[in-house]
Length: 331
Image 1 (spheres, rainbow, N blue to C red):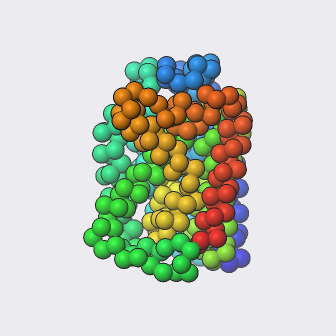
Image 2: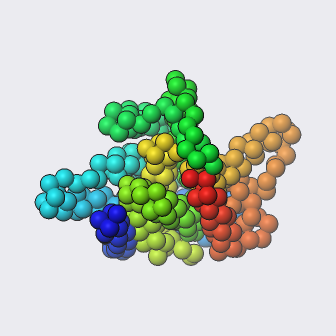
């Protein structure tokens, strides 16, 4: 365990420092290329002031995590003959592919100078492809089973058989997009994803799961480094590049640990954000034009009723801590 703790500390430190370093270099570059965020006209009116803020800042923390993993891989290879980082590398690969989809979406938005990139169908099709590849690799190299652990049952497993695969695809793509929907207020996704990363650290430590701790460390270092630039008022946005990457990393842990239901509890804030969008659409259609929330996702509803951005971040951050605490009890 002590070796794992040193690795975890190194991953956290490297991810944080490289994120800060890369972001400092990336922001002026994005400004020079006028990679400013287009703002939805139907959004809160005060968000118009954010137009032109550099986006795609997630590239920096993706690169930071990639470089950190590579350095540790080389270190272990030279000193121990093996890396022990295969599990984190698979998580990074899936997250990277999700981030690449986000990068393509962001790039098309910037090219067209509007808040529309890939169509929903195009984005979801690509997400299904990379999620299918991830499930294949998880099964082939790590023996991930079609049975999942049930929270609060002291290790009881539910065998899903054939149904595991469509449900796993739904879980992966759903959680990836739920994190994407949460990225709508300065610092919101950085803070809430940081809470989940902290949960990974504590869960991994309590259960002796070094791989989970390593994922938690690299994510926590990355989002804290990014928060230095993304806290209100944000100097840069992570874009779909960053939010889809974070979604991929978080959801992958649920599959590889065979605890997807536990992860859904820990990610309760993201689940509620996604549910608010679904409920808004259903209610709008059933009521012929009426809205259940003033605006969806839910964080915009709180903005519309008078919450400031810091208040929204604090409320959702505290809620995230409560969900993570509940998941920790059910592990």
